[in-house]
Length: 174
Image: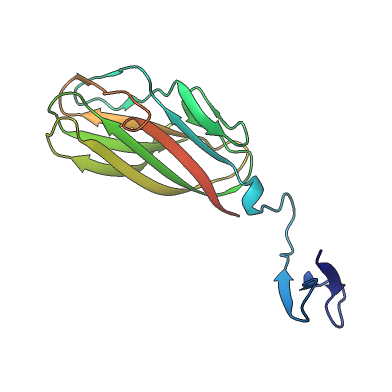
């Protein structure tokens, strides 16, 4: 077990020295002077959801993509196809959509009900998954993110856990 040793001359500056149990080497860990929840890799919010049923996306209309199956949701922040994180920070979003017929597709990340980041536009090819990513700051209280799709012609999505999905994980706290 490692021991905690206050840094030399420590006055509560936020530095601790960790000394390994069987070596004389030390490592310094700096704890930021921050208020609120301090995140470590084990407790950062993340989710992954997918569509198990086909959804009709109308031609030339931004349509909210629905996700009915959660693979995981580490902090219970994903509901009704919307991610509302309760920890302020920067989140990496990734999404994919596949259409069963030939049409142009585009994914769009909406933040708080409005277009925030346009994703890739994929040319008219059937059964190709269009993937997009965005790094989005969320305030941890009122911000939420949803995925919308735009198709060149009315078509159904091709549902599965590998082709119509929406996921995010916290990159770092703010």
